[in-house]
Length: 250
Image 1 (cartoon, rainbow, N blue to C red):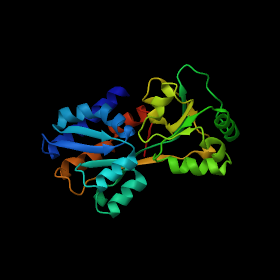
Image 2 (cartoon, one colour):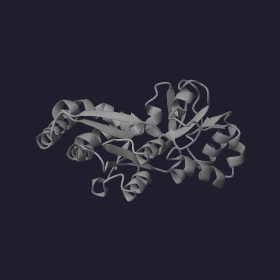
Image 3 (cartoon, rainbow, N blue to C red):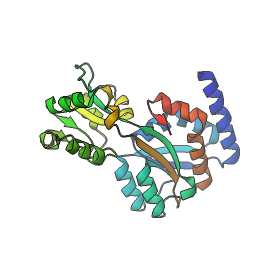
């Protein structure tokens, strides 16, 4: 299967190389999940097409504001509703929109510590209440959902004083360092930090999947190459690489 994926990747890249001018730098705006995927499949893409991929990352909401402020870029891979809003505002090209991947929300603890029970909604609730501290992003794609979820579960007030909400994608790092007991963030983020241990996804009954959607910048000077990169991200080889990161291809 690995050999087949490599063949698909090579064939796909040769096709893109034939259709793109080489030597251009493509600047990609996204979150850590985007960088995880590009770091894996990017080097071969660069060698075959001649394009250098530069990935700039932060919390997706921050990257959206940078786009709105006029910072130059070629391709954005943000949360679906953010991408749609930027298309409406004219920052992104509508006919390049493509859902690339999606990820569920998971719970993290420091590697080597006892794994708490989160298999049912009640176990998840009790684990949150028993934890000395928890952390999730201040502006993450899942933040609005989690705030509403905890209010619906009747534990928002109990969690408020022991909740840390960082402005950067440092949830898994804080857990790995032992600064916070429980982290709640998209699963690939947890898997990207060696010192963090994935306990598991939150229960399916209350799960929320974050969809990451790509689109080309309206002001990009590399429109053709950026469009080709979107096509590549939807190719079978790229889908295989995405799934290998613990992410579902959408």
